[in-house]
Length: 165
Image 1 (cartoon, rainbow, N blue to C red):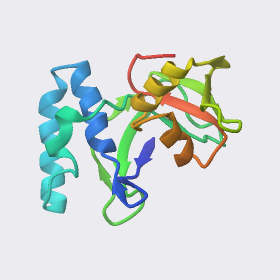
Image 2: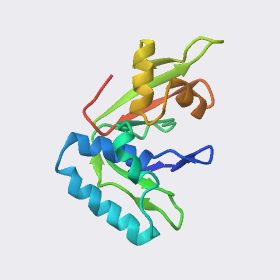
Image 3: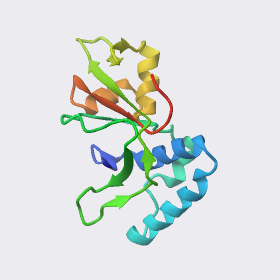
């Protein structure tokens, strides 16, 4: 199933493609040739490299993503096709098909000036765990993650690695 990703947040590059690839190449050295193959395809289609290709060594890997999943369509074992510009003329699959390793429930809340609270499968992550969770999802911190989802959020965490909370 197609899993769309944006390339910007608030008109700034989010480097999700590069962060996802960093996570994939960290998993297996066998992914490195695939990285160059997909980068070459991107160069051929768009006549430019990915936004943050030169910053990759400084980026934290993105190893999962969060979705609303209203229709309960995401399931473990499904094939994931990571794309940008879904349905548009520039739709592009930027990584090989991957298997969905796990689905977890996620809930984010914040009351007043307290830190963002993140629950995975009903378990509250400690504050430092919430920070690492945000990094693992491609954000700088839990506050940025919370802001991206416009406040309280309930949905699914889609894993393409074996990592689980």
